[in-house]
Image (cartoon, rainbow over all chains, first blue to last red; front, side):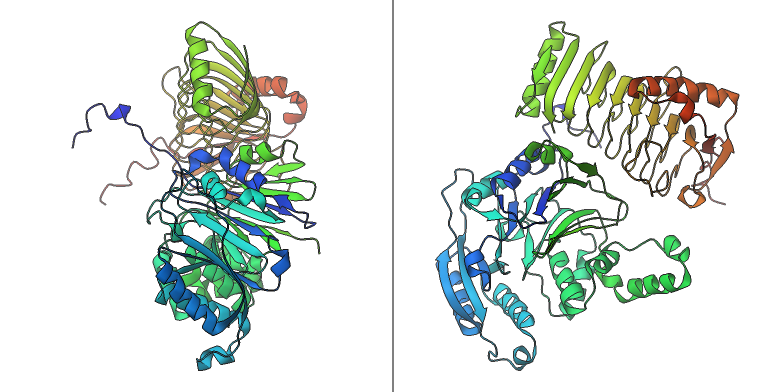
Length: 365
Length: 246
């Protein structure tokens, strides 16, 4: 095989995704302009095929309602989703998500939001016996599967905003500079194995959980099948979706701590387990055996939040960068230190966490 | 020549530098650097750079000759396939520093990330050297074929971490890693031998440490209080039979 003529002249995008997160541990509100600016610094980590943000504390007036963000190509599709929502929820408010025409954002879907409370019961026996959060998760899975619409955010007092475009364009489209939150995550996408489409942009969310991810979940197939056995159905055609559902399952359903869930995602190597004291060794062996299909294989740097904390985690051999920095009550996590310095010149501490060891920053209250 | 990189896109900054170099400018001080990639990449000759801020990915890749001093931390991929020159980092460094580096020297005051010095190589008069004042992540010197890494573990933000991460020197078949103090056995890759250094090693170590201590204002005597260990592949061709049927 011969290389093409003048192959060295080809323009090539060399990149990976970029993630940024910030938490104010005292719940002081951070304007959207900060995460937007930080993502701008990492513009070249993406290629315009996906950008998004998650923000916590943005809907204080509806803090007790589920804020559903829904996207759909057509009005009919949205109507069919609304039919289902009416059936299972009380709609308190229904409105388009405020957007503005943005030159770089072409053919956006209809984006709509509902503030909802659950109508317990419904018409399915299983939905009557499960608790409210299960009920909400079930309805989300149902809408995503049965209608052309997608619920892309479903937590309380939080929201995800995402789509096809660079993060700064998505931010402009969703007018994110008008929001304020105490936790923000942002993502710049460089899709590798899956299509760059609106539903496949990050963050991925479920209830209050949101996740942004730089990397590639090679174990997507086995994770997806494992989740399917537990009533989580992947519909968004992107690997990171499994992490959002696994987190919900491990922590909310199975009662694991975030630290334990990190050991499921990025367990110690067997030789490290062999060197542990017996009780610890047995616990880790059990964790690996029970949750083998939930292990995340492949490179990742993920930022996870549920509105009470921000967690950063790398795969166990650190195939993607992650930097953590503190300044007063703000803690930043990012793919690049420069993005943090761009929004906060003076930092108290800066470090690169160890591979496979989560950095979990909780709110003070 | 003073350049302000505040909100300047990396392409513009690098273009500006190249145009100035073409006009004969040899000394640069660049302020407000935040994430601009590819600074000084492929530049040739006796140039000097003083950088304030955090330069972006792949600084000094393929560089041949210039001296760069960074007042701040650096990100990933510094000195990628660097050929000649000197980089002084007054801070910490990210992942894959000195990847496939084939000559020149990188002095880093603090900690470094993962996969540092992998694929380093030496040929004839080319002998790359990496001095790390802090601790290193996993895979230090992986597949190393030549040159030297000197790891001190002293100036670190990770007091509880071992001096180097897992799988140090995995697949190493040339070159040498010098480590100050003890090396945890479980962190070492296979097919390596760890020995105390000899007089010749100490000559190379001291020469480089003198420069390191001068640049960062560190007391050389304090650095030399601990003995150094030498990590080398156990034979000339430890993987010579890897693909041979037997």
